[in-house]
Image 1 (cartoon, rainbow, N blue to C red):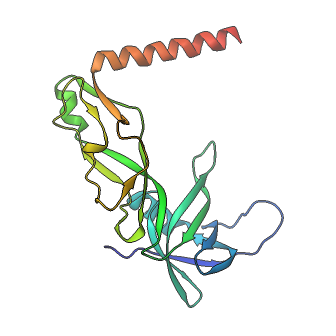
Image 2: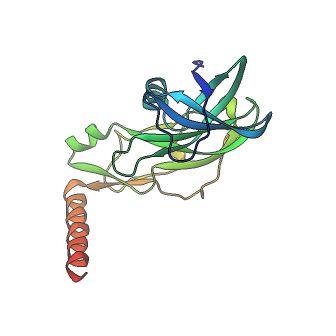
Image 3: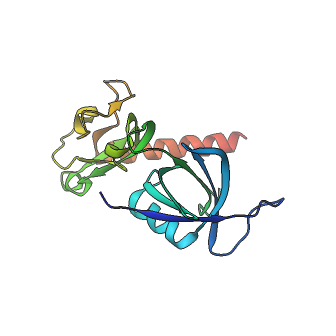
Length: 200
C-alpha cells in the first residue's frame, strides 16, 4: 500500500478565521492524543492527496519528531468557492476498527451511453465498519455490462469479507434507466423548482 505522508505544523490560535496563504487549518485528535491539536497543512500537498485518494484518505502524519497513522475524518469547504477551508485528521492504529463512509466510483458509464442508457444514482457513498489496514479509500464498481432496469447493490462491490457493511442488504445505490427517462425526470424537477420560486 502506498505510504501517503502529510506534514502537520503548529498553528497559532487567534480570534477570527485562519488566514495564512498557502496553508489550510486543521486539527489532530484520536489514539495517543490527550487533547485535540490545532495544526496547519500545506495547501498544495493536501489538495494533491484529496484529488488522488479522496476525502477519507489514509495518511501518515508527521508532526515534529512524531509520525502517526490516521485518516482524513472531515473536510470542510467554502460554501461558494468549494475550496478546502479546514480538515480534521483522526489518528488511529492500523488495526483499529473504524466506521467510515466510502465514496462509490461508478466505472463504465460511457458503455451505457452507447446503448442509450444512463445511471441514476440514489446513493454515492457506502457505510462500512472495518480495520484501517484493509479499508480502501473508495469503492470502484464496473457498470459497463448493466442493462435497462438493473440495479447496483452491495453484491456489485468487491469488498474484503472482513469489512462489514452498515447499510441494509437490499440497499439500492443506483439503477440503469433509459436516457430519455432520466432527461425527462431532470426536466420535471427543474419545472417544480421554477414553480416553487414563482409561488414564493
